Length: 166
Image (tube, rainbow, N blue to C red):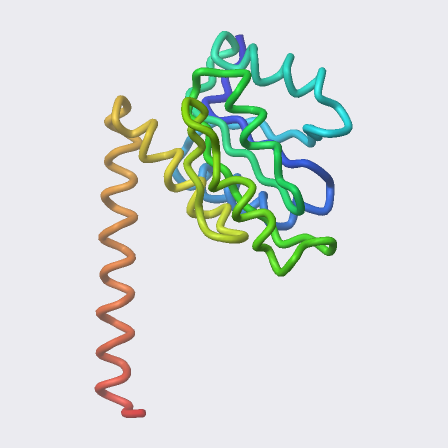
């Protein structure tokens, strides 16, 4: 059994600069994770094995990022009962990211994938933390503190605009 609560997967090495944002935010909440490159198209057997055994290895949520046709989140969801959060990634072969967004967003009935905005792996990490926080008081407290910090930054920024002017 792994100690990772969240699995972060991506279709290729080129997605790492986006997907590492999920890892960074999970670290701030003290949530363990593992990060892998697994292609739904080039290694479907590996994806089946990895995602099919994720729950037994102790995972609670999977974050899957992909560009282009972006089948990774949906195929992952087909192999597991864990919540899957899809991150559409704008890739070099992408149609301005819309192909990735629509591929992840338009899942068939019975195979849901939560979808965040284009390149929004940080939000995927926060959503994974919120899912874990429903049963982990320590994570929930860190999320509450995170929300307070965001509020304070906005207030300070607004006050700075008032004080210094436009």
